[in-house]
Image (cartoon, rainbow, N blue to C red; front, side, top):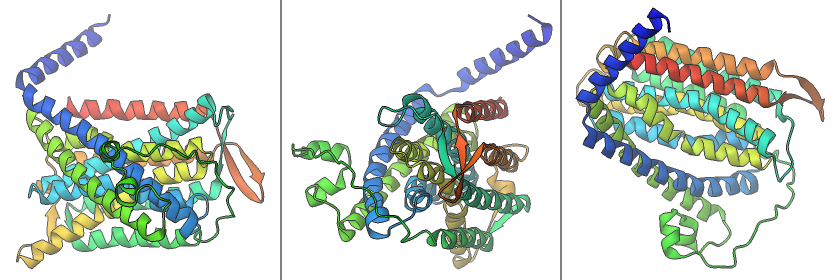
Length: 406
C-alpha cells in the first residue's frame, strides 16, 4: 500500500473518530426513524395520488403518452420536494432552510435524472415486462428533447439567480413562469390519447379491511368504498393524498434538522442525502410502474418532469411566498444566500453547477443512443449499457457529496 493511500486512510479514520465523538446517537436514531416513517407515508399516499391521477389523465383529460408522466405524475411525485422546502423555510423561520430546500431538490434531481431511468431500464431489460425480457426501451426522441431542454434551461436560470447572492420574489416568479411555458407546451398533448385497450384488471372479490385501508392510506376505499373513480371522487382522493404527503414532509423536515444537529453538520448536507432520498421515493415507484406496464415515455417523462417542477415550483413558489410575506411585514423582500448558505465555500452554487453537468451528460447519453423510425416518429433505443452508465454517474455523485462532508 502506497504512502499516500495510507495517509488518506488515516485522515478518514481520524475524521470518522471525531464524527463519532460528536454524534448524538439518540437524536440520530430518532431522525432516521422519522425519515423511514415519512418515506412510508409518502409511498402509500403517492399510490393513492397515482391511482386518481391515472384515471384523470387517461379517462378524463385523454393525455398523450409522455404527457401524463410529465404533468400529473411529475407533480404528484414532486409534492414532497415542494412541501419539504416550504416547511424548511417557514416552520424553522431560518433562511438557511431555503439552502436546505435547494439541497433537497438538487439531490432529488440527481436521483430522478440518473437512478430512476437506470432502474426502469435495468428492470425491463433484465426482469422483463409480463415475463418477456426487452432488449431495449423505445423512447420518443421528441419527449427527451422537450423535457431535457426545459430541465437544463430551468437549471441555468437558477444558477444565474444563485450567483447574484440574493434571491427575490421576481426570481421566483420567473421560475414559475418558465414552468407555465413548459406546461403550455405539454397542453398540446391533451386530448390526443389514442383509444386505449382495455386493461385486464384483477378484481379483488374480498372487501378491503378498514384497518388495512387506513394503514395504506387507501382514500378511495375509505371515502367511496373502493368504487370506480368519477371525476369528483378522483379529485377528492388527490386532495386527501396531497394533505397526507404534506404531513409526511413536515416529519421529514424535522428529521433533516434533527439529523444535522445530531451529526454536528449543516442541514444542507443532511437535506441533500436524507431529504433527497425520502422525497425521491414516489418518483421511483411511479416510473417503475410505468416501465413495467410498457409506458416507457411516461416513466422517463415523470423523472425529468419532476425535476423541472422541483426547480421551477418547489423552489420558486416558496421563494415568492416567503419574500412577499417579508415585504408585507415591512422587511426586505429577499433571501440573502450569504446568510442562507450554511454550507461553506459556496457549496449551494457548486452543487447546482455539478448538477447541470450531470443533467447535460444524461440528456446527451439518451440522444446519442441508436435511432430508428417508428410510425413516423424517431425513437431512441435505450439498453442495459445506458442503465449501468447512469448508475456509475450516480456513484461519482455520491463520492462527490461525501468528499464535501469530509
